[in-house]
Image (cartoon, rainbow, N blue to C red):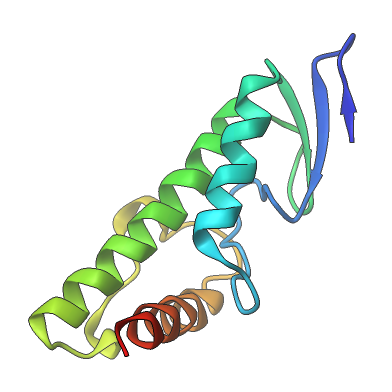
Amino acid sequence: MYLPEEKTAVMGDLVLSKHHPVMMNANPQVWINILERAELLGVETIVPGHGEVCSIKALHEVKAYINDIVALVAEAVQSKKSIDEISVPKAYQDWYFTTYFKSNLKRVYDLITKSAD
């Protein structure tokens, strides 16, 4: 929900403040596209699905997280390495829901390897 006069968006689980997003059923590119459309609205305040009310900075952090996950998995696939070898990047180590990091890697791995078939 977007409140234009307040420049506030209720983003639900599209934006989580300092929490690893849950990507089990997500399409990362569609998620990024939605976040980019929200950026165009001039949002200043975000009510996230988890965490404190935050600024557009949290949206940028989630977008960076998704892009980082995709890049890490793509690099592992290209290098023929196991995604089990990928550690949580320093930028996200202090975020809540760290247990979702590995399932997020797996989801992106499944999407990348299925599209390669």
